[in-house]
Structure formats: C-alpha cells, structure tokens
Image: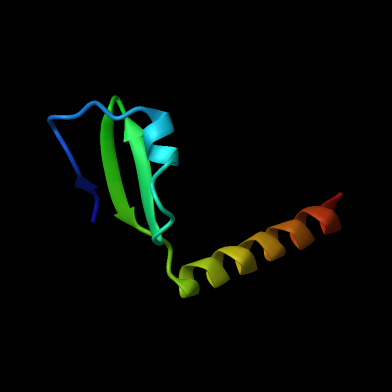
Length: 62
C-alpha cells in the first residue's frame, strides 16, 4: 500500500534521489513523496521469467 509521507513539504526530485536505499520505492509526484514497498524476491523472479519467455517468443517469431 502506498503512503504519502508529507503534505506540508514540497519534495523535489533531488531530495527524493538523496533518500537512503532502504528497500522501499520513493516517488515524487507533484511535490508529494509517495513511498511503497519494494518488490519481493518472488515478484522479481516472476518478472525475469516472463521477460525470458517473451524474449524467446519474439526471437522465434522473427
């Protein structure tokens, strides 16, 4: 679930990029800092598998 971190501070992209890499996703949308959980290992593995299947499918049809 996404959370808006602050409504009283206008975040800049530079400030968001300076945040520590703590495993969560930080996004700056219209000055709001949006924080969502990072992808889990199982999601990363599934995404990689889907990409591999797509790559092989496209290569076979070319």
